[in-house]
Length: 381
Image (cartoon, rainbow, N blue to C red; front, top):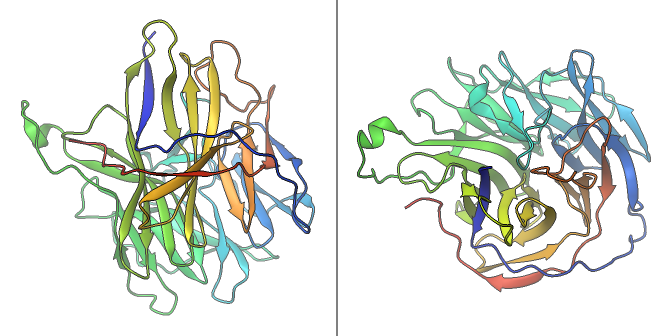
């Protein structure tokens, strides 16, 4: 059988996980909730949020104050592209999109199971940004300028300022990264998006036959950092699933490439070593960007997850193997949460969450991180 694999460019060395005990005042280790389908997760201000199947689609659940509760939001047809942040007054809020046509979500790996933690924004249309104050607030639409034909997804708010991805008229299939502030509500700032191939290959039709396409599949902001997962296709792109983890520094205006990779066909013969590395939604955490990568070994018979820490502008990143396989991570302070699946069944392409074998939301043990100098490059010629 031919399966699509995702190999990273410039991935740092792996090390064994180290045990750690929860610090005083931090959540205890162990399961927080069971989750029957993969979903984005986000944390901040004492809240951990995720989507759950409900009548009419998906709802939002939260872990807060030591207990799990359902949030007062109407269902969404796909898991929420939710992010926990702060409003203008510093109160915890959740931002997400609602759409005329809700985009599909894709899972991390090869399973193609229900749900998913990454957005396929091109499959949606007419999306607008909403915000919910988490302490007893009501959902409302933000007054972000929305020209005809625009569609906005993956919002993240920090002190009232929202960064999000937009399918904008006049930009074709290249999604823009935008910033909106309540102090200047009628204007938007355009940030740096991911790399787009510019060279046309020597093939029939060239760039006309295969125009460049780039989209944001996940985004997070904390302070001056915005990090996002950028999926790209077009002329010169290697394989069929090229991606980048990008980090924009709003103070300096610089955009950094934290990691990159691309897909290809593999696992057609006897089992070998590392088969793929599949990126997960990155998290902005102070001066760092964090992201986990799902790794498949020996023709999809074994799986592992690596946590990568990257400081924008640095010539190195640090990484370590997590004690548990994860499908998504969230971060609050020094605490990292993960969506942990059960062991993958024999013959499965990837670990998944299901009703019969649910995933668990847990506080992860921080692995020992080892630094290594590396230089990732865009995943195209």
